[in-house]
Structures are given as structure tokens and as C-alpha cells.
Length: 119
Image 1 (cartoon, helix red, strand yellow):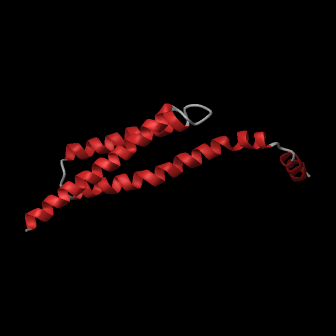
Image 2 (image 1 turned 120 degrees about the horizontal axis):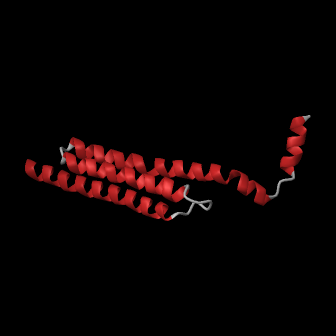
């Protein structure tokens, strides 16, 4: 009998109630999806840098910057207020992309030097 009552109540929910009810779930889902879209690429590029024997302090700097960027994006961006649009979201995303760009360019420079040394 309780399930019939719950279905009746849920069927009578307005769209505004449904949006409010599932807002935190959608925000958490987007935070996880953004993490999975960006962080594996950054970690792979940094791992390639490490295998190319790049400076260890620079690699630690890139990893630390990536960590700070993700904290900014999540804690001070997505979960900072009810709208999920804190300033940290923009800065965290841009910093994550900067880490990816720096790692990719650095790998290209190291790779071109290795190829040049062979010939």
C-alpha cells in the first residue's frame, strides 16, 4: 500500500520539485564526468614525461597544480553554492587544461630532441 501512495505522490510532483530533488545528484554526476574526461589525459601525459626522464620537481609541480585545479573545480566550483556555478569551476577547468597543454608541449619538445639526437 505504501508503494501506491509513493507513486501517487511522485506522479503529482511538479517539474520544479523534480529539478530541486535531483539537483545535487546531477551536480555530482557532472563533477565525476568532468573528472573522467580530463584527469586521465593529464595523468597519461605526465606519465610519459616521467618515462622521458623529465625533471622530477617539474613533474611534481604539474601534479600539484593538477590537484589544486581539481579541488578548485569541485569544492569551490560545483559544490560551492546551490547553482553549481562558483568561480572555482572556471579557474579549475582552465588550470586543468593548462596542465594538459604544458605536458603535451613539453612531451613534443622532448620527443623532437630525442629524434634529432638519433640522426
